[in-house]
Structures are given as C-alpha cells and as structure tokens.
Amino acid sequence: MRVVRTIPDVRALPRDGTVGLVPTMGAFHDGHLALFRAARDENDLVVASLFLNPAQFGADEDLEKYPRDEERDARLAEEAGVDILFAPPAEELYPPGFQTWVEVEELGRRLEGEYRPGHFRGVATICLKLFNIVRPDRAYFGQKDAQQVAVVTQMVRDLDHEIQIRVVPTVRDADGLALSSRNAYLSPEERELALQLPRALATKDPEQARARLNGLDVDYVAVADFEPRVLVGAVRVGKTRLIDNVVLDSKESS
Ligand code: AMP
Image (cartoon, rainbow, N blue to C red; front, side):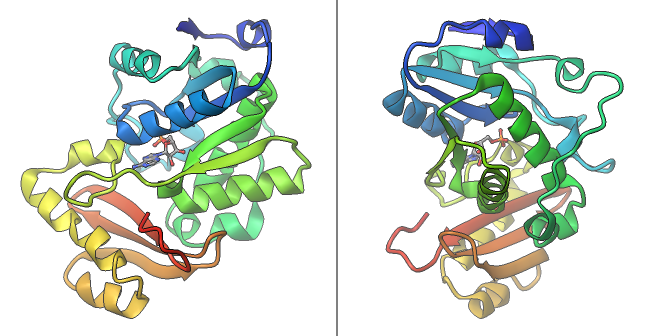
C-alpha cells in the first residue's frame, strides 16, 4: 500500500481498470474495514482517503479530540486490501482563499442537519472534491450514516456525477452498539446507556423507540424517507453524541 499526500500524486496514479474510493476520517474499526473489503471485491484499484475534514465539524464539536493514529490506520487499511491511502494535510484540500461550497439544501437541513448546522455542507463539499480528485467508478459509504448516504446520493444526482454510490450495512459490536470512532469516548457506564439506542431503534417503531429512550438526552427519533426508509435516532450520552438507524421495509436488521 502507498500513502499519498498530494492531489498531483493521486492524479498521477496508474489507472488500469475500475477504481473504488472509501472516504474516511480515520480511527478505523470493523465498519471501515467492511467498506474497504467491499471496495476490494469490486474494483481493480482501492483508494481510501484519511482526512479529518474540519468543514464538517461545528465550532463546539470534537475535532480537536477526535482519535488520530495514522500508523495503526495504515496497517489496518493495508490488511483489508487498500492499495492507496490518500492522507493529505488540511491545506491540500482547503488552501488559502478556498470559497466554494456544495449545499444539498432540504436534505442537508433536517435531522442531523438541524443539530449540526453546516455539517452536510462540509460532507458534500469534501465528497465532491474527493470524487473529482480520485475520479473513482464507485464510492463506498456505511448505512450507519444513513443521512450522509442520502445527501451524497442526492448531490451526485443533482450535479450529474457518473460515480456509483455503494452502501455497506452497519457493522455492530456483539452487544448491538453500532461501531463508531466516537465509541472510544464512552466510559463503561456510558456504554451501557448508549446500548439503549440500538435497542430502541430495533423496535422499528418511533413511538416505542422514544418511550424506550425515556431518560436519555434524545436529539431526535424519526422515520426518514431515505432509500431505503429508516428509523433514525441521535442521543447524547455524557459528552458523546451517537447516531444510529435501522432499515424499515426490509427483512435486514441493519
Ligand atoms: P468516518 O470515518 O466516521 O467518516 O466513516 C467513514 C465511513 O465508514 C462512512 O461512510 C461511514 O458511514 C462508515 N461507517 C462508520 N461506522 C460504520 C459502521 N459501524 N458500519 C458500517 N459503516 C460504517
């Protein structure tokens, strides 16, 4: 596996056959590895980006304390079949004078967008930039972030990009908690509380889910008309904010 830091070096990569891109922010867990493996199965060249995108974090969010360990991430990515790890410094993607943003208006404002204003503008912009830099045939995203999938899919449609968006089911720990880099912030007691989120969503019923989350700090629980339809939820456990969803209208539990 090669680690590449600049846009010209990505553009200079030899391209023979199909290219799969997995955008990430690092702190890899089995959810990321499932995306790498899916990309490996379907493409000749697998590119993973490792970029902690400041534009998708609010001023009072966890950008500073977000877990970072590039050496470990590089090892895990290589083992999962990644060929190229694109890990640029922030100035490579946001040079001085940067001023163009992608806004997916209605979809980007609800649910997560309401609680994290500007988040999906940051997500859509970085994804479009990565699509333009890497020019992949397919890009891989986790169902865990269902609204992110909806926003990116809408952007690709609206801006006539040719890329194919592939979605990988949510990977969970044995106890049902969806894997997330942010789970590392949870104390054992907080983790017990956090488990109420997947348990509540597993009812696949918003009223029942809300009742089960009684006592937790709930941002929202709602049915979202994405493709597929999902029951989504976001809660705060201590200082940690967790999101999760279950697919409705399907026998799948992810
Ligand atoms: P992140 O590094 O958090 O930006 O995540 C990178 C990609 O991994 C996104 O497409 C996420 O949706 C996906 N992802 C994160 N957690 C999981 C999970 N538990 N299962 C499947 N995909 C995930």
